[in-house]
Image (cartoon, rainbow, N blue to C red; front, side, top):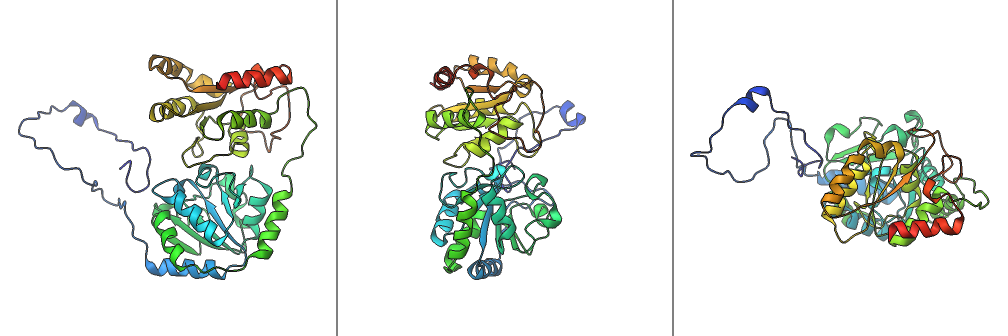
Length: 364
């Protein structure tokens, strides 16, 4: 169940009588592995060709199309199909927090993250689009804001493996149960190229408009500079794990992820303490890649005992802590460039040159 349907952790809760029962393996034959049968559980949904045709016609006729990607775009061959589809028809792409990396952050069609911490271009495009193709998106409140005013003039196409996610938070015009990869493969054969030059010019104008006011350089490292140091030291090829808080948003906004599953973060439950164990798991799975945990002092305290796990297993995931004067989830629309007293990394709050040296040393 963890690998079929909508992938993810599965909780198996065994009652006490089962745990106390005795089991003998005599005369027990091993059964072949097969998909589990559970009432109401349907892991595979074939998409109706008629739905693909309707979606293709809407996208072909659109004057202001947009693709919105979420965590459902990380499975199968979806990232490769997404890159091919958006590139062939020159369709702009915006991402939720969990969708970062499905399309490289530096791709010329990627507008950035949407929502309360998103970019001007992504949010303006989403609000002004006439057709939005939503791939593996659950429409959390951090993405939609006021749901009644969310992309009011658009025809919304939502694709998700989990039927319960369709029409749950936002009214959808065309709801499709199935994999994003299957839909994109079908759309590649049915969508026709249209002229979006006016839309592209408008998006270009929004992209050039800065979402945040920039401050004059000071003798302190800002969060943006720290993330850029990590970006430069790893050439954008690292696996980044974060906990929950301001550092999470700074990382999502300023680090350029080059591939899917290179950003490990808790975007649903928002669990502090997620970062270090996730980084350890990534280091085990990919021993030859840089694995960096960007965390906060409060989050680090949740699972700092796992440093022993890291040390006893003879590997190390580099950690960049954010030491703050208070433990808080997110200040309302904090400036990611503000060098305040609760600055991004207390260790690095020396002179600019020595701080950069410390960052390079931590990543070497």
